[in-house]
Image 1: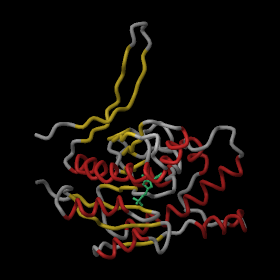
Image 2 (image 1 turned 180 degrees about the horizontal axis):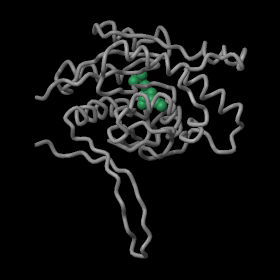
Image 3 (image 1 turned 120 degrees about the vertical axis):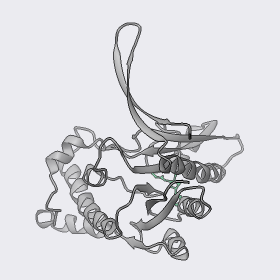
Image 4 (image 1 turned 60 degrees about the vertical axis):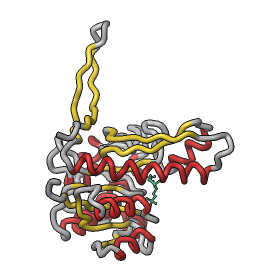
Length: 267
Ligand code: GAR
């Protein structure tokens, strides 16, 4: 077994994925140690889970930042190193024709909240991997670039309740159910500048029966998530997860590039 890596988690709710990760760390199915749990929501069950396992925790609420911007956008306290045009150039969350005041409000408030998040994280010492476990906020390039200091080695990962690229967004299982899918699933992926659009590390699927309710789909999906997330994290801790840029030439001479995550076989 190699050295244990330090893992931080961000959550917004019940934290059943967090629990699966904590249990896997404690059972040595992940060669890692939980360094902290951060939440954007106070009083959620995930924070209680952290306390039970003596994992340091903190809360950064986004609401007060959003309220303060709405009240007085001109005097809103932005981080010193925030550059709106840089955000605009990098981001993939809004279409090019989205109203600028809406986009500005989003990136200003999120960067201010993210500055606070970064300070809370830094106060708990260096970490090797940040896992989003039911964290219901999109991270912006402001946070991502300050955390991923080596662009070739991303280290923020997320679990999403659908087989991406289908059904990104806030209600993956709901969207799967409403579409009438025969198969549902979950995806672990690296975070990039878009919504649920980063390179895919792992996926699991489950069959959907005609009689399944939305609750059945959520239950089946979570059962798969609790297996998939620890598996992917352990592959990361063992250095088996590599992001590779591949170039393909089609028969007609066209060339296209894609970014693929490869999982090496353990030695
Ligand atoms: C999970 O289903 C997770 O995939 C989803 O929230 C749920 C959190 O459950 N995440 C997202 O939708 C992220 N966009 P949990 O708090 O019990 O782990």
